[in-house]
Every structure is written in C-alpha cells, then in structure tokens.
Image: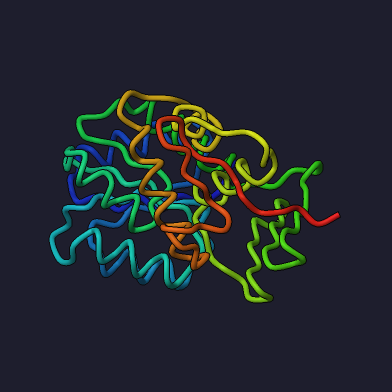
Length: 231
C-alpha cells in the first residue's frame, strides 16, 4: 500500500475521478474542498503528498501552498486551470514539485504523483557530498542540504536539480537534461521551469546571480556546478 495523499479540490466531479484513479494505483486518499481544511490536515496528518487546486472557495491556492510548505516538508503537485507560462513559473516559485493543467489525464496525474514520490524517496546507494571545505554538504539519503552548518530546506525537485549538477560537476547540463533528470519525464515547455527552480535554489543558498559560487549559468547551453568537492 502506498502512502496517504491529500487531494484539495472543490470540484466534486474532478475530485471523484482523481480519487478513483489514485486509489486504483494503491494510494490512500483524503479529500478536502477548502484551503483552511487543507492547512489543518497538513498540521495533524503524516502525508506522502498533496495534490492542490489553486482556485479554492475560501483561500487562494498560492497562500495554501506557502502555508503548507512552512508547516511540513511535504511534496505538492499543483492541479489547476491556470495555464499560462507565468502562472506555471509562479507555482514552481512557491515550492511546488510539479504542475498539472486542467483538463488533465487521470493516468498522467497518477504517473506524476508516482514520479514526485520517487524523487522524494531514498536509496541504499545514496551519497553524501561535501564542497568548499564543508561550506556546502548534500546528503542524498536524507535529502538534506547543509550550508555553513545550517540546514536549508529545498523541495524535492530543487534538491534533485542541485544534486544532479553537484554529482557531475564537470558537466554542463542543458535545461532538457535537467528536466529529465530532476522530474523523471519531459514535456514541451518545461525547460523554462528549470530557470525558476535555479533561481529558488540560488536564493536559498545565498548564491549571487552575478558571481555565483555554486550554480553557474553557461549561456546558450544550460547550467553547471561550480563548487570544489572535498576529498
């Protein structure tokens, strides 16, 4: 049996379909239709993932996403009719781990939920990487980022992007490669979402955009990691 999914959706028909497909895939699903109920559930339940509509009757989905991310380290998949590139980028800037536009395929929803959970999981072959004399430490098993001795919270996607770049620091990754590595699939238009994730990571690491220490932009190609790995 897979973990508990919180579905935050005020459209009863959409909720019914999503619940049916998620349960068929082996997930337990708790459904609420308001933002306040969602925040309450996140505070008291141990959740594997949240599927969040942005257009809720009481609170904005954006406010709910921010509040949930502050209360718990839980992956969030946004499910919404807000389809513009600016709205998708804004969703990722909030810390969302994936973004699905309505109308959607229920099978794709399940596949994306499974992909996010896989990225959020741990493996026996996980690594611990240290850079710049311990300035930055990445712990793959615990999805932990330690900067100058302090823990930094990254989303599952942000951690995967950072770890992918750091683990092969000699390589410049294109945006398409980072989408495939970090998100587990590739869809047209998702390449520019990588820029939003990179911006978030830089802000959390305090990495200068003009003279970055860790995330280097290779213009016309993509990104590479600039840290020096400790022996």
